[in-house]
Amino acid sequence: MRRICYLVAGCLAAVGLVIGGITVFYGDFSPRSYVANHYQRAASRDIGTEARAYLSTKPPSFVADEISQAWSPAGRHVDGSGVYLRYSNDSVVLKPNDTGTLILVEALRTAYPRYSGTLGGNGWAG
Image (tube, rainbow, N blue to C red; front, side, top):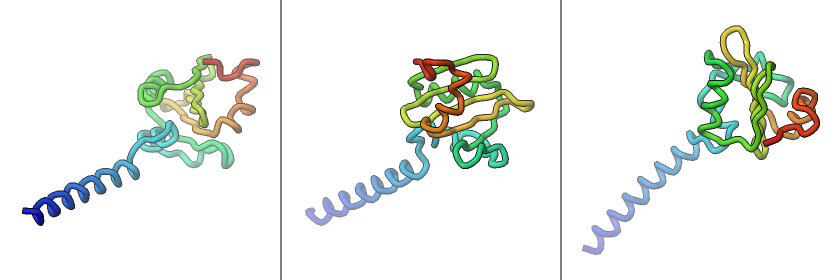
């Protein structure tokens, strides 16, 4: 009886490790990983080494809502040039293009100076 308990406990532990491993490698643990897992990579549209580019066939406001539902932004700015989402460490900038939306994901420390002219004095206000 004791041996069966150890066998069952071992099997449950193994299943837990498999589920945990899948979650770690395929989970969306940040806005950055959410975008990488849900939108098409467009490396040719990157901005230097700072901003990684992705594409969607949907309009910017729709993509912003999708991302915001998965990861609630600390700040959101919308104007004619696009949608700007601020997170604790990242920014997600959604700009319209011919086929839908260009999505730029960048560390907040490099995005802030890049977009401060667009966002104004208070920047990424919430």
